[in-house]
Image (cartoon, helix red, strand yellow):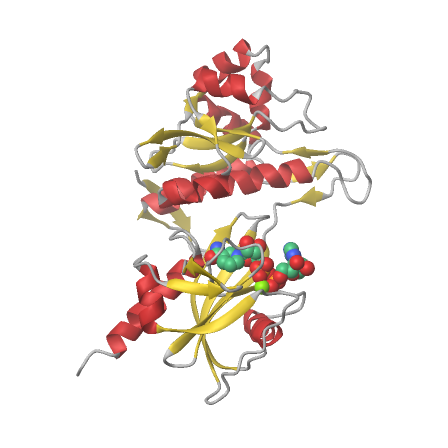
Length: 352
Ligand SMILES: NC(=O)c1ccc[n+]([C@@H]2O[C@H](COP(=O)([O-])OP(=O)(O)OC[C@H]3O[C@@H](n4cnc5c(N)ncnc54)[C@H](O)[C@@H]3O)[C@@H](O)[C@H]2O)c1
Ligand SMILES: [Mg+2]
């Protein structure tokens, strides 16, 4: 879909028309839905709704994968009717995106019992029977979702959680009210506007040239190692946060830092993961693990990491027991960083 747009140049009396790309028209459409409640209400008429129950998305198993069912407005109204609720409840939904054809996508949680909503939560198991699916904890479904669905569900869960957590103004204590799209909440008494937030987190794969440094926290599944991560402190740049986190967690100083990519991560709250590769100063590779933050950290060879990426059954010693050496799931940016490092290492070790 494309759109002709008139551009008026300041001080000139002519208009120039150019073709806007599908991406630009889609971005402008989403912007309009966030700013204009009536436009958003209208978009719900032809939109698709993703359902959640207490922040768990509705999924349907299909082989080794999960499908993510969607309802149209009529189907959603019928469902609410069956459970004795009126269509007004749909106003609790949040906008999470749209297709290239401008079909707007919304998410609605039928299990949250928010005090600012007049509606009671609906019974999970009866909903599941009615919808022929299950509300599955998002973290547990990670391995069986495709990247497009997972990204949409990450956004939806984060936005639903943020609204549930921000029902009252922190200054007046009065209820806040969401706009139709759910892109903000406004305090009814003092008009303060609250916007959904993400915490910036740096994640760094440290290398000494031949090995990479991986670490684990007590809460990780047995045998799982990942890159070093940490929340940015107020006042820090990304570079400052990376240097501090690496120094704090493993006692090393960095020499070089290179940005790789970023990712929105919904667990346990919304974070913006900023991923970097880094190298330590030559000869300074002795790890001093901060045991208040980490359970263990170690250098791993290219061969060990490459085998673990391919799930080739390498094992690792942990508290005198042996566990399969695991890396984070493909959807996690930590996995991407490790994969990039392995690929770069494989290229640089090729004979000229
Ligand atoms: N997507 C990925 O690949 C990936 C990989 C690793 C970690 N992560 C995420 O990165 C996040 C941070 O990693 P970490 O746990 O090592 O961080 P961290 O090293 O900063 O340690 C966490 C501690 O930081 C403090 N903290 C400071 N600011 C905080 C804030 N805004 N929110 C919560 N705690 C705050 C708390 O005391 C908390 O216990 C985690 O939430 C984790 O889910 C994602
Ligand atoms: Mg950390």
